[in-house]
Amino acid sequence: MNSQSKYPPGGDAKAISKVAKNHFGGSYKTMFERHGWVLNEGQQHMHQAQSQIKETYGSIREFEIYFQALWPDDISVLLTSFWGWTPETWGTVGWSDQPGLTHRHNLLKELSDPFICVIYVTDRAKADPDLKGMLSGFYLVSHVTGDRDEFSHPMHHNTEPSSWQHSLRALRAFSFLPEYRLKAIDVFPELNRTGTARSVSRWGKIIEELSEINQLRSTPWIEVPVFSPGKMDAEPVNPDIKIEGMVPAGPASASGYTVLEGTKHLPRELYILRLTGDTAAYMGRPVDDSEIFKIGLSVSPELRRQFLQKSMPKGAFQWQIEKTTRKDGHTPYSFTAAVAGENAMKKHLSQNAEHLGGEFYLASEKQIATAWIAAHEAAKNFTDKEPDNTDS
Image (cartoon, rainbow, N blue to C red):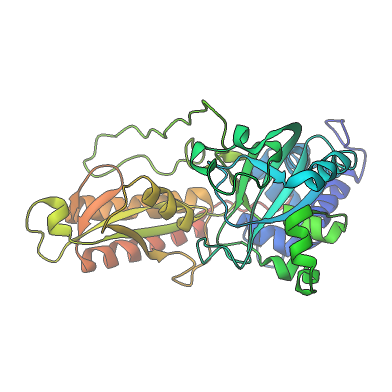
């Protein structure tokens, strides 16, 4: 990687081209779509890329560093399958029995320290059906060896205790965003062959094909908690502001269920979630035709829904996606445009519905529908007014 802060003549274009090739399949159009950049009329993606990159990342150099930071060209990539994807309780990759111990020993000689381990969920798993057969995420795995119970939550210790005991410690974990998640068989067609999927599951497979690696590392992801004894994760805090029913939008970076690094340059969707169940029982009073809704913006409304659901005890109340930008047929927005849309929803609901704290409202179907229309009008108007970033 070039360590210079300034490039020789033509070096900035080469740096952009390299990132486009390694992370976006060589397509400048894909790079624009993933970032939510709008191509100005009469311009070409290649010619407008430099100004958009400087606007978003600060410089071409920071753009280059960002895309080489976690997943550099020289890191090893291993593929295997799991029965599910719960890195918050399972912080390890392991092998079984004496052959597994030997295999781990030999494999470490071929893998960088650390290495990337990409996980797909097997079709036979008793997991979330939306995850079956899908590339769910990846670990950054060290060469630290140990028993699997050292790197997993006690809830797993009595489940097939003789399996996967020859383990490696995962340092970090990352989930592919549901809206961008790939089918394992589409990226690795050989999994269709007899015995290949079983072999990958038992031993893992080192991925060396650059096109496959580029497809994986260009798929948007967020960092998620990985099991580590004694580790605590801070909850996000959003201070209230003066207007009742209004709280700060976003934020652009957040602790808790997301980590900034993998998503800060992705476009945002507006969303509305509905809490299904007996609303009157939940509120402890009659609510007429109103229900409880959560509004906001996110790079992944589905992950936001999952986070909220996991924060509740199991019961009759379930968070469901009511509306999202993509579901409604719109193109996701820049962060600042999405903020304008989110604030329009808050303004309407704070004036016409009952604020329940944070971004939660007791509202009718009509109030929600009107707020949603106002949100996208505000976001679109903001997008139309955003400055022209063409090269001077």
